[in-house]
Image (cartoon, rainbow, N blue to C red; front, side, top):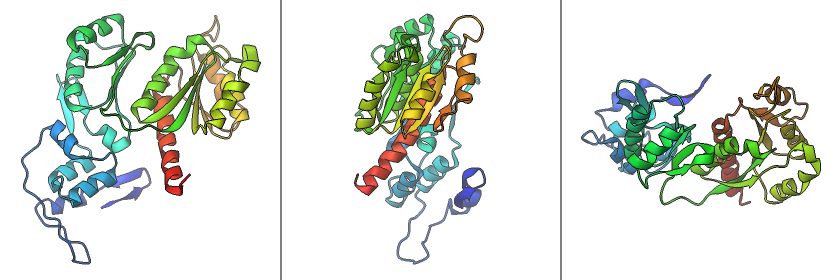
Length: 310
């Protein structure tokens, strides 16, 4: 049984009885037999599953592109790949959630990170590695030449699906100051990995409030769907942006500032206490989370616009 439960979309073990039997619709017009198939490699499974949604998996099964066993494995979300008995790679995360694999590198030993990257590159078309240390960057360049794009200033490396689909929607990425750019780039790259257009606007903080209006007008004229706004210090800019637009603003507190509260705590408190409706906030320096949320929302809006012919 597939359906909505109190905690979201649920796939029950009702698939189990159909493992070795034909599936016959109620009208009896069509049969979709359970095809015999050997266990496929993970990359082969991903290549045979053409879409990025549960509906696509069911469609591929109906059209005979994948077996019932493979479809069941995807839908149950049980496909994990163990790495050195330390890391478990969730192979179908992007298929299930729409969010690509993200590896947090900062606390990982360089040898373990090398093994994880090697496995991920064998299995995934898109991946983002965040918070790289200099030793990690050196390792990626020497061990995986030409396989990943590296942005040193933002401490990220990534690989995008090729050929890249035409991007949809528009996410505005705004920073109050240039110190906020590395985290903002995490959000921007995440949005691009998830298939969204991105427009970057930097250094328009409230210390010079007149700088806000023209870039914001351009975003609005461009039919922006979602805005990610990164700010350190007192963290006021996201509230200003939210008060001037009718789109969702995702505030990202940045750990820049002086002395007391200067590690992002003041910016976080300011955004949480905002009196501007339409502003939501992620944790300090969480560009990845902000980008993923913005992209999910933007893709949903873009889909509705396309359906309505806008």
